[in-house]
Image 1 (spheres, rainbow, N blue to C red):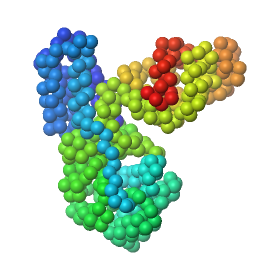
Image 2 (image 1 turned 90 degrees about the horizontal axis):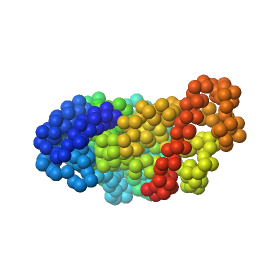
Image 3 (image 1 turned 135 degrees about the vertical axis):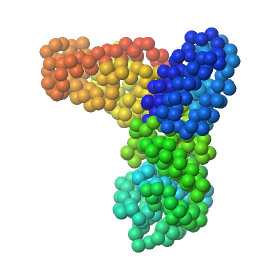
Length: 441
């Protein structure tokens, strides 16, 4: 989502490098561009103005720290203020009472029902016993959608009926959850195409029925600054405790994420990063700030690795990667592990400085669209060829290309990618890579 603003911000900040001192003139020059990029990203005007003022105040007149060039020092200030802009630190979900209530609110089409299922699955994976309650009796098939989703992820759901009122549904679901030992009740409320008094009155009544510990606004990141306006209206009416931002994997400009916390004083707690049921993550402001400024997000990368990698396989693969035994057989296994972690481009962007090198990385066949092709090429090799790539001569390359439905040029490109990776492995500290692959960095 932040790709555009990230590229422009990092380009602007690079211009200040090489100065012996951070002066008011070069600060103003850098911040002029930053201001334009923030407003272009649909960041609230007052939020952008206050952000720039804080950066300037902190940076003005500072001598360069020994060992740290002015550009890096300035980026450090921007990074720290960007963290604060995004919320400062991650905010945990609150739980109180039995069952602890979570009420999801928002406009129609923001993704409440889908998010309800994702949230239930997340809580289930953390040892909770969630219970879903569909309370949207107005949108056609809304109840059936949540029931179907709940069944697909193995979560219990209250079988609401459209002839019931939302008040009746919430009362019955709360009592059922309490009696049957469910520790969390997630209520999917109705939405509207716009904010109106009838919607707010209903939400206030539902809030009074089960006193939820969390009232979370489901906001579509694609709506930009409108999401902030909606957040203000819901916060004033029912008192939000936080926000779940959906479609963070889309091409939105990022203004909502950069503005919401400052405008309503409520944190973004979770973010939707895809369509799959498990595509819901805790929002970490410091990690997001790092990704925006192309400083990387190693912690998230390691967490994804921990979830996807088999530890024994990872250790075996690590040993081979730093030896002369690393083969196409091992390369194929590594690609399979990487594909479990999500889109490769997203993973590469978590590495410091990698956004600036994405074009060259794509040339080495590491983009998602190349992964399936690489797998097909490797599978078209004989086991002997996968173990010893040196025997892959011209005729063998032609045979491999035909067998995989690719061209000889594409086979050559994969071979080049493989050889480049072997060279790169010789330059990497094995100890650090060992920690990364074993999830202990």
